[in-house]
Image (tube, rainbow over all chains, first blue to last red; front, side, top):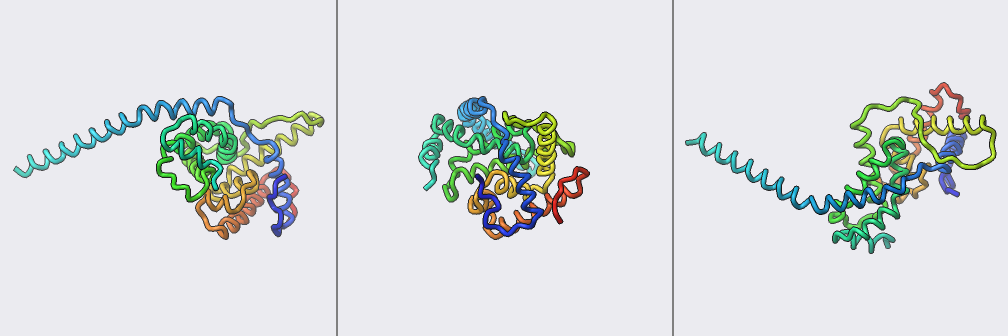
Length: 77
Length: 184
């Protein structure tokens, strides 16, 4: 049994609302059993791929910074 | 003491078996909150998103709040981001609910189901901050203290916001053509 609303001063409308919400509490939507497998599989390949993606991103950023610096120096000369 | 502390410590070092146990332990509440916030059709995507975000953010988890509260905060944010990206749903959305085996007439069951679906739709039309506290307190039954940790709001603000959330939902139901029989 839920303690929702216990010890609170509720209006008649709020009390009725909590009664309605009790119907939602008593019939919860349920997660598929596959959820755990899907999450763990995704975490596994992301854990493997992440360092490479970060390295690729870092290399891209370094190249972009170098290109900007080079372009800047060319324009100044 | 956080009951998830040991598993969290192991998962932080990349132990996927420990992470799997955390997912198994919290999948039901994460899924329910996602479903209540944006609807059951997208609850699975939101759950996956929330768990994977949590997995990658574990190194920055400092344990200032229990893991469950931290995870539910990520879930709430994932749900709100998800909702912001998609089209608005129809006012009277249909939800998939678990059926029970109680003995009632088909007409009773149909009416109850319709009422629940209407109510779920109305909950999803609350403003996001109101919806979060109402779902966490009045549907999921979290303590005020835990809601304060999930939403990062002081305890007094949680109580005030819950009061306003109930008021907003009552107003939405009263404005509905369906007769909810709410006293004045």
